[in-house]
Length: 280
Image (cartoon, rainbow, N blue to C red; front, side, top):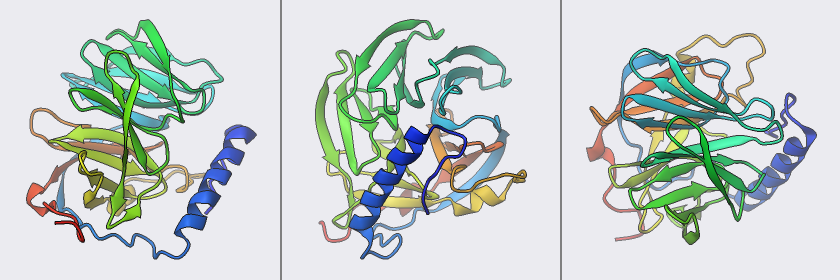
């Protein structure tokens, strides 16, 4: 399944194809989702409206505000909405030659990655530009663990950045039973674990931040069947992407690119393994 984006630039299409061909060559002898970590149990609590035009690349909650970063060239934005009313409070558009990606909040700063431009933007809480910094690889997902920024770049590796200087200070290889988990995308740090969307899948990996081992998977395949898909819907593009933690109850808020809904989920933490198969 080649990811050719008819509504994006040829440059994106060609780079994504090369990326995916390399990944498939490394995975060709493995069955689909040959995962050793267990499936975590979850319950659907509620459905919330979501902007169907938003190509969601990053999602996080900051108090009473929902912060979302969107992608596509010429359509990349950073948006801050009231969680209570859905009202758009602040918005910032990226330059047309930049493809927006993951977002994270660090104190009074909001950070948004770009995909292939090699930069990340830093804004204040009202989305006024503060600074920007360079990235050593592509920007995909971003989260903050209270000390460090954690970034994905579409590979099986997570990268750590100092939250003040933004210097890259370490990496983490993500595996399940020794198998590298590539295409790590949108991230959220929740209860001491890293939750990661995996591009081109309906699963979220729950990752031990010390070892990089996947402790459990959330299989959310059922969610995309809960809303009407308009003519022209492309399931290869409109994939699950976007994870936030609701602070009042610890539930997850998840959505996808161009999805009309966000889903509030309660995850059964007892179903998340304390160990990884093959590692004691």
